[in-house]
Image (cartoon, rainbow, N blue to C red; front, top):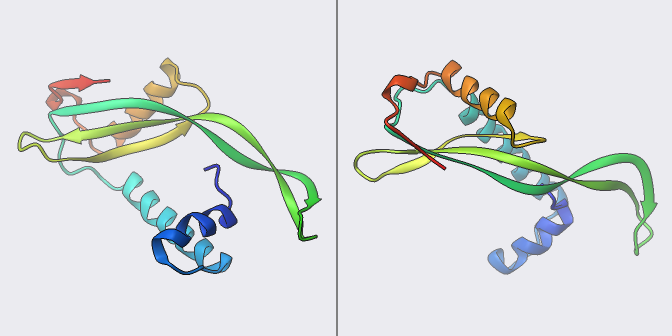
Length: 136
C-alpha cells in the first residue's frame, strides 16, 4: 500500500544487510498477503469480551493504463495515489493478551462501511452478545 517493490527493496536493505531481488520481494509479499487473507476469512472460534476498533487513513497506489520511462530508461506503469481507510478491530482478552481480529479497506469511514465490517465479523462467528465493550 503505497510502496513499490523497489521501495521495499530499499527499505529492507538496512534490516537484512543485503539486497533482495525484486522477484524475491514480490514472492514474499504475495505469500504474506495470502496468509493475511486466510486469517481474515477464517472462522472465529471465540468472541473476545473487548473490541478496539479504528480506521486508519492511508494512500494506496493504484495502477493506471499509462506508462512512463524511469531514470534508467525502463518502462514503468504509472500509479495514482488514492486515499483509503483501513478499518480494523483488535480483540482484547481478560488476561491482557490481544491480537488483530479483522481489517478491511474501505473508500469511506461511514456507517455503511462499519456496518459491512461488523457483518463480516458476525458471519465469521463473532457473537455480539458476548462483547462487553467496544472502544474506538
